[in-house]
Image (cartoon, rainbow, N blue to C red; front, side):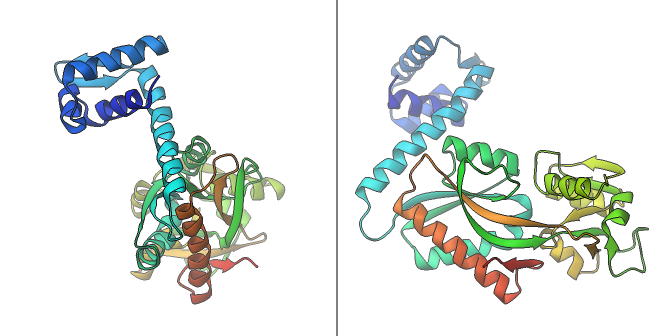
Length: 309
């Protein structure tokens, strides 16, 4: 198996066509086809379905595509690490959970462009469970995750402690005259939450379980955009940080009630692989992310988050 075969395969999948991939790669289509055939023979599996509409990955091809992307990224990172001067340069991919990107993404991107013009910072927004897998495989250099006690495969740096609130439509039936509610009261509402393996859900279940409580009725939605729509349709309430709903709250479309007895918060951490070395550029972005998170907490522009000493 050769690196060029991985590059060819990824290009074919990305463009959905042998002819388009051949044009982008500046490789004759018969040569591209021959390399693909050799790759499939080496792996002992068919990677692509060929149809009149183009090419599509088989189940084996989908699995191999993820690994091929990770390998090519690691090779590119290795080259960058060897050739970098004292000034960090190159590409860095940072994964952010949906509920964090509203607070951190733009400030970090602006700071990176100002301080490190030779670094291309690529931000990707994903579910936390998916981000952990991408970090393990090397598809992202860094990821913001939540300390749930399961982060031992990663090197972690605390960023902030973020409070969770009970959030619903402004005119929803849930506790209209209250300024705060207990956790037990929050759990009695119909709650719209991510799945058990993602985001705030493990933290909510852990705190509730320790108090001898459990959510009464849950609608699972793994998308902030769809979750917002469900809230505005008054399908239920949610338990989330304020940041992803801040615009709606400030416009009077939603309201957020602090939760007590007990309160719920989560520790936000920046994670890197323990086995894959960071490039100089990734190290620079890691330090910058910690700096920016601290500024946001101290300046009050990351609502509900406090700086961890």
